[in-house]
Length: 427
Figure 1 (cartoon, helix red, strand yellow):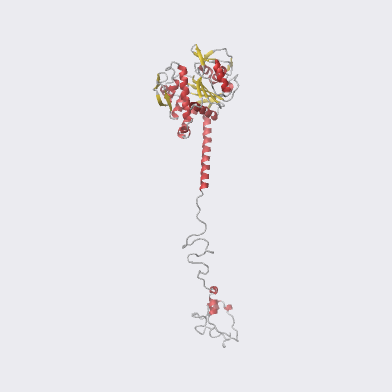
Figure 2 (cartoon, rainbow, N blue to C red):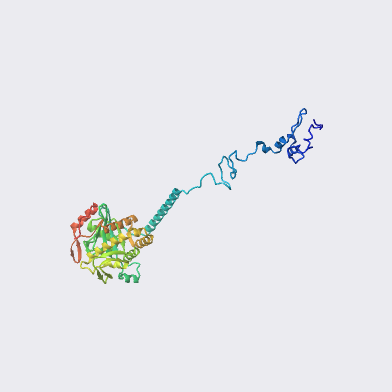
């Protein structure tokens, strides 16, 4: 028993080396100094013995749970901060958790396709409105009076004129157009577009026709017909496209749905824009009036040569009829070239061709781009053998003018109106 007033032994008072734990270098344990309330009183009736074990627990509370090297919990070096072996990687071990994301190709393809379609639609719409705004809708077919009833299919009157509008003196000389004022019809064709084949019919400009009663396009006055017989191209010279349409309808009984006209300069520009048109000529010919100088065989005609080809008449015995055949062959070949994928899919050819054509075309007020496209596709089908080309059937002449075969013309018109396959042939 101790004589100390507080009942502590001399070891507890720090009187010996081993008083506060084995190997303790402190006079008093840190826990006893800082937290004296942790000290438990020793009963007076029992001897006090302290080997430092309790003080060691008080001095190092963290060791009360025992030492864990990490092997009991499955933790090893380099796996700090993991819970149950899962979690993020560290500086030593390989990364764990979700795998790296791979590119979503399906989504990329989807948005690429959407972008391409959007660009295509926007470009197409912009091109449509640009082209539509360039059409010269100057012909008013509502001024044409006493018109025949419309039949099935669509009928176009296609006209080439000798207009020199907008051409310089050098261009007139180069193209051998002369310098005559005004404009006259140099080419006239009927194109029927239907479900049973497309048909292109050339109307010789020397055709003998009767000028009917008509209303003046500019004056608005009504001019009574007197039975006057003239060449077909005189109708255009007298009162323009409206009287030409009226004369063709009155002499055939066929309703004209649309009108399209192009001049010398515009025609040559289209041919040059499309890169020329290949023709296979059965025989060569020359004509000083048109500037034609061709050899037989395959050759690509530029704008100047093409204009000379379709205008030549003095080199042939049957001048006007042979010329209309040349015009049909060339226009069909031109339409085929314009509508071909090499032109349509190439913007460097398509836009110059459209620009040259639309700048020089004169059409009726109701002509749409769809109608114009239908016209060119029909001419392409004629050149490809899916349609038919012919001259208006004739039966002799009078005073140098060609007379139409009335029986065959009536049959041809009936087949057009009923949209039947054309069986009528030229004379």
